[in-house]
Amino acid sequence: MLTVNRMEYVIVGVDPGKTAAIACVDLEGRVAKIAYSRFPEIGWFISQISSAGTPILIASDKRKIAHLLEKLSAIFNIRYYTPEVDMSVERKKELVRKYNVQNNHERDALAAALTAYNTYANKLRQAESIAKSKGYENVSKVKAMVIKEYSIYDAITERKTKKRAR
Image (cartoon, rainbow, N blue to C red; front, side, top):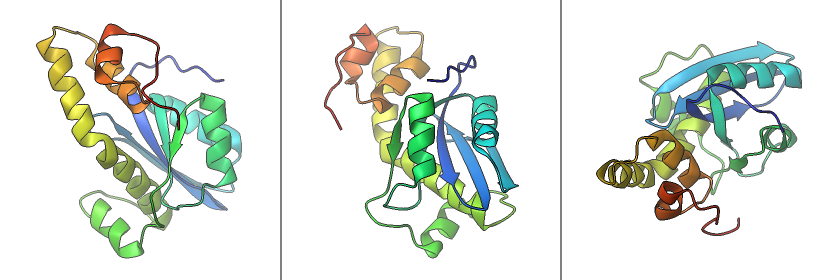
C-alpha cells in the first residue's frame, strides 16, 4: 500500500492505454488535476495521482474494470468505481463540456472521475451538513470515510465498522 502525505482527498478517473490519462476531482467536485502521457508506466500514474492529493476512489468510464485500475486500487488500498454500462462518447462530452481537455483520453478520465463524484455527491453533501451541525472539524475525512462505505454516523464518530461489504 502506498501512502500519500497530502490531505486533500481526490477521486481519480483513469483512461488506460498506449496514450493514457488521469483526472482528479476533489470531494467538492472541483477538478484538481488532469494529465496524459504516451506509453506511461505504472510509476507515472502513481506520481501523477499522488501529486494531486490522497486518492479515495479510482474510477473508469467502462463497465469492465481494466487491469491497470485493479492494480492502482491495490497499490493505494482503495476501492474502484465502474458505471453500470460503458459510458457513451456523447455522455462523456456532455460531462466535460465546461472543462479544457486536450484530447479524448483526458476527456474519458475526467468523465469517469466526474461520474464517480456525481454518484456520491448527495451523500457527500449530507455528510458535510451533518458533520458541520455536530461541530466536526475534519469534514473531508468524514466524506472520505463515506466513500469508503462507512455510514455518516460511523464516519463522524470514527467507528471502524463499514456499512456493508462490496
